[in-house]
Amino acid sequence: MAVISQPISLEFFPPRDIAAQERLIRSAKQLAAVQPSYVSVTFGAGGSTRSGTEDTVRIMHRLGFPAAPHLSCVGATRETLGEILQSYRELGIRRIVALRGDTPSGMGRHNGELNHAIDLVRFIREKTGDWFHIEVAAYPEMHPEADSASRDLEHFVEKVKAGADAAITQYFFNPDAYFDFVDRVRVQGLDIPIVPGIMPITNQTQLLRFSQMCGADVPRWLRLRLAEYGEDKAAIRAFGIEVIVRMCKTLLAGGAPGLHFYTLNNADVTLEILKALQQD
Ligand code: FAD
Image 1: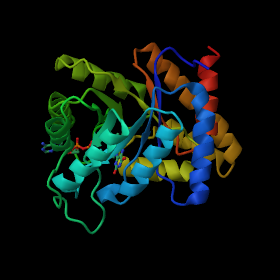
Image 2: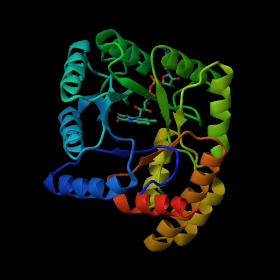
Image 3: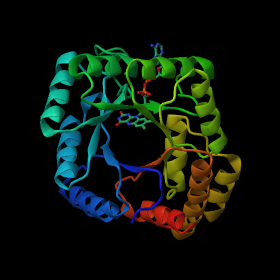
């Protein structure tokens, strides 16, 4: 089904065991129906899922999806990063999501040779020229470690100028934060696509915990509505779909160049959201 006219991309994470791998493959096959322009596979902090990411990328590649591995530089050496890039080139991978990553607990902040995503973007361009289409991360509600919104924007602009082709945002529930961020990037003279990252709402506790960590604002009205549903998972799911569909419509109507879904390796909710968008 061609769902919306703008491209859709999907994000998966490396499964922990064989059963989870089978579930992931089932989900990916179901999601093939939405014809994603690519699927991305996350990378564990400090390289903890390096092989998991590579194996999952190979699975996605075999299933026929254009696959985009995430690669983070925190704690990694140039040598290791070079090897990883080479193995993706050999596999025919043409898109990569370049990140700093988060420092695993117990590790110093600057244990690697590259300290920020900009260093990784430069390294990829240095090593592989224009082979990879490079996606970077963007934070409409500001990266949690940034000193100020304007410093964060400066860093983002520098990262893009270092050689990124496009950006995927951290998830958010305030479309105005996205529109404001895009406007501020445009004022800096950059016209790269900035694709909103969409997080389905299915589990209140998990969502609040994760949002706290990554700096995504869960608006008061949304928290209060979710709290009222308590443990009623079906009600949260139905309400969550309604909220996200409405937000996706606002984003697309406001010019978002596509949607990137954090699928959490689960096809059902993403499919329902896309089905509702298609009905319009
Ligand atoms: P950067 O762009 O380096 O920014 C990090 C912080 O440093 C910001 O506060 C920025 O303002 C600041 N900064 C940047 N450059 C400089 C500079 N030159 N000097 C001083 N300060 C600077 N994490 C994973 O571990 N694995 C994943 O697969 C993964 N996938 C993600 C996918 C998306 C779409 C997003 C949005 C995030 C993802 N993350 C992932 C999380 C990400 O790694 C963290 O948010 C991390 O804290 C920052 O990564 P970054 O690439 O945005 O870093």
